[in-house]
Length: 473
Image (spheres, one colour):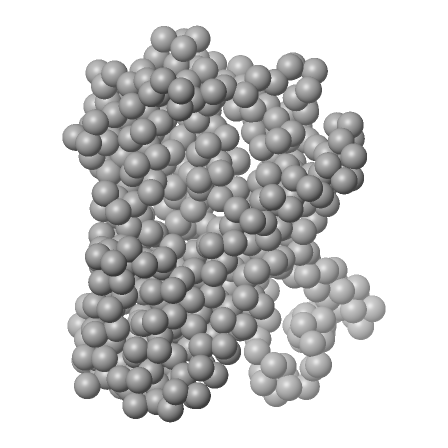
């Protein structure tokens, strides 16, 4: 019966989004109440679950999303994204222009939302296509593959960050592991596949594209542009390497069992056990605690934002008022994404409180499918049905959570497997499909031959790489 309830809930969600065109946030709330009522929960208890799910989810991700959006806006308006792109092309040469665009997509796309980074970088694609006479789509696919992988695989993007909390995965480790499948996914899905698109003629429809001109003196330097883009990456990887070297800090109950009060005490315990002197252990544990603090996604993005405000904003001649107004606009742009993630948190909490998850956990031992493959398949089905990679990811995670816990699968790899499924089968119900089609002036067949094939290849290469990684992790 609980599985039937989940199935009915999924059908309701698909019907609301696909057929009735209800906004994903409202559809998730309606589905949450429907699942609760079908599970015979008291309406007031359902409401409590929804509010708790929304509150817990927002408490974990809202600052990450806000800081990321503000950082992305500053990178866009300061011309830092343009600097990175032009200098990458100059540095790597025309022969390697695809690889330069791929690296640019990664650097710009990691701190920026997909739609924002696409809109910032697409004008540069047309500029290069015009000046070099190279095929537009051939240039676009490597760039878009990097943007797509960053959006679906890597924190601090909303979906992988949210799912990391659902699976109780280490966000920093997810970022570190996510860099591994990103390389073959982009090289195969972006660079290699693009060779089949060289004969596709494309151009932006008249009136759709207007290039933003930057005077050379307005553009910031390459060093500071890259620094602002990769500061959160460097800080988060610092925490991941600390965890891989010394092990992730345990939960509070384990800290109590060890007789220590906090993470600093945990590291002190490690080094005293290794025979270090009290003074040395205290100093090293304080340094490692600082590393963990700075590597938290909230702090890493906040620090990158501060650096960007000071260097790309104030130092570029803008007033603090101008920088703050621009940043405020970016928050409005992500408001619906925040609400959709909040709806996903409500759905997840209702599944927990209705005891559906406990039932799935109880029968998961009889399920013979690899949990990574199952997460990939479920997420890809949602992607096919609803179009949104974010919705596909955050709907799959609470369903897969008990199976992951029962089978002992790596939480970090589960995040990547779910993300790989969410990038599959892009078609008419995906806004990214239409953006790619309209901006490059393609017909439907050409869009399937380029964009959809690239997205699906990225997903397939991603899950294969994750399965190979699971042999060693």
